Length: 61
Image 1 (cartoon, rainbow, N blue to C red):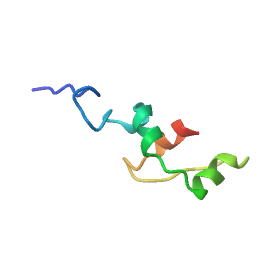
Image 2 (image 1 turned 90 degrees about the vertical axis):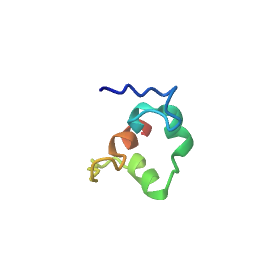
Image 3 (image 1 turned 90 degrees about the horizontal axis):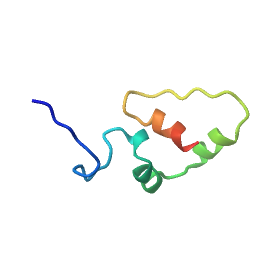
Image 4 (image 1 turned 135 degrees about the vertical axis):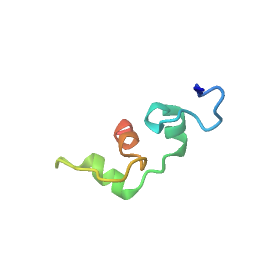
């Protein structure tokens, strides 16, 4: 049996945060670390476990 979850039937939005811009813009809290990340000219590596928001973070930049 296959389930097809869409944003209309799922009150939490898309199953992947980086694909749900509305949820990201309302749930994201900008921190000093985020501001430093986007304002630096240095190359940056973001490390985290699966599902911690690495891809979603880059959608916000």
